[in-house]
Length: 461
Ligand SMILES: [Zn+2]
Image 1: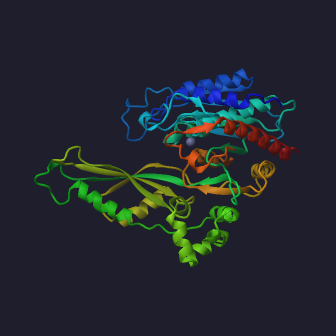
Image 2: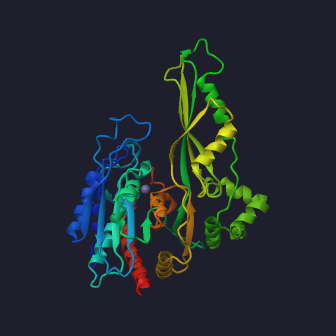
Image 3: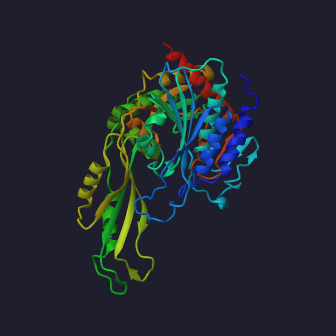
């Protein structure tokens, strides 16, 4: 296959994509979706702009931000022979905000400098869309078709929960997915090794479930020179004080036990034995337990977490407000429902005057198959060829992507983009100075192409 200039083509497309502003809210993703559709069609592939609702979020004024935005998704397809079921390559069009004052380069200029493409979305997730799109165009130049259809899907609204993007597509336009068996999306990738440490190919098989809650108290609005004792703000603070003291129980799910067992080989000496049997080590080895839980990312993998994020009271020092509210970002281990958690929380708060409302929640999902999955098998094959000694780790992540919408439909979904991201690169995701190297883009397209070809060979009857 002639892949000359692959990295440069990827960089140019990504740079154009970054220059199209899609900060959500309001998203305004239609122009970017149109760029992808046009690129797919120019390469001779099927491409379609998907109308998606503009929508108003809960708690948002109709007519406020968002309603004037032009939103859409992009869909494309490379037809296979039909001997195997389709694979969906999913990414999202929207990005989180970026403050130009905090960046070294303008986050929306798409500058290509020092072998890297810079800007918001370079990694999350315009870079992913570009890798998917170019993998499809590379594969379209093969002489014999693959057995599976490959479906490109880039949706709006992921950064705000995806209800108006992937949620809409899975609910209202499932025909766009064919009878897909597999899905690949963001949420995993290659962590480079170094020295004694092998590279880790992290493949996400499940995600924690966000459960966003609002706590609201009410009282009398009055002059703050004569406050009443049961005003809204002190009442809310008392409730939040109980919330912040909650110690959620530790639970090691099978996918998490498997994940740490696989990571054992790459773990520091003092943790290796504990990783082999995480559940027992957390129960029986207090020193290991302390070390493990001290790391917030690891802690989040074995328990529900509660972050108090938004606080609202009066807008002025000399007013006792009639209402006070707080928002909690609760992340549940798969299997727990938001309503069950809310009921437990109400018991802990133990104050009927504190109203608890669900702002957002997802249906808990079961993990996509680890062993026995043809996709995971293909990833293992490519990892062994690409990077002998690399460890493939199926894992749970504390964050969440749009994958759950597809898991709910029974599509085995995996978070894996074959990019090599050092921890310092990954800081750019939702952070400052997001960038990706052209080499990384090129390697990712090449590895994804090989992965899909190996998967196809495994599919042939
Ligand atoms: Zn993302």
